[in-house]
Amino acid sequence: MSTMKYSAVVVAGGKGVRANLGYNKVFKKINGRPLLEYALSTFKEDSACKALILVVHPDDQAVAKGLFSKVCDAIVIGGKTRKESVYNGLKHVKTPYVMIHDGARPFISMDVLSRLKEGLVKHDSLSPAIKISDTLKRVEHDRVVDTLSRENLVGIQTPQAFKTEAITKAHRMAHNVHTTATCDMSLASEMLAIQGIIVEGDMRSMKYTHESDGSLMELILNDTHRTES
Image (cartoon, rainbow, N blue to C red; front, side):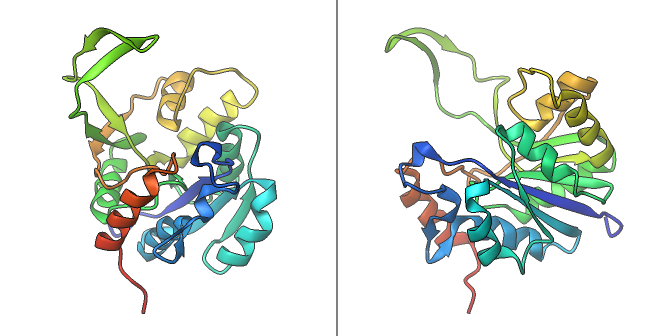
């Protein structure tokens, strides 16, 4: 794995309306540090990560540059959709491999990064995933209408890892095309019929979506992330 070289594209181009903060949730302070800083610092600590590319909303460019210009190799303006934002970030990737990560997921496990890097030796598209432990119900108008089997279901996380040539080609093909893909792995599958491979994820890699997520995220980061002296 010593020859593995990848770039990280961290996507933080949304506005985070559901978080009800009045500003982009990736700048919310958790334990005194902007949420986005956690993911960026983890990639920075990985010697295989040769370039760190941050994609932000135009309104957040000045703030992002003020906070992270010394950490990131490029701070890129995102598009109107996540797909466009990822594509803008991919244009700056020069390494043979790339990991695409949601900026609202502050915790990244080094073990997960290792599993992704190992998988990239053989596969074009990988994603960490966790098994579903809760009982799943299909609901219509607040009424339970069916119970779904959990046997073959997983929850997809990021970073998702790719051979750069493959995922860039998929995004280029999908640039002005409507697609049903909900993540980059599914985009690669839809555009190029590339089968996505799953590696074991980490329950702590939760995404900050709602205001109520902050308390649990604070506990996770306080317990697991290194504190800078």
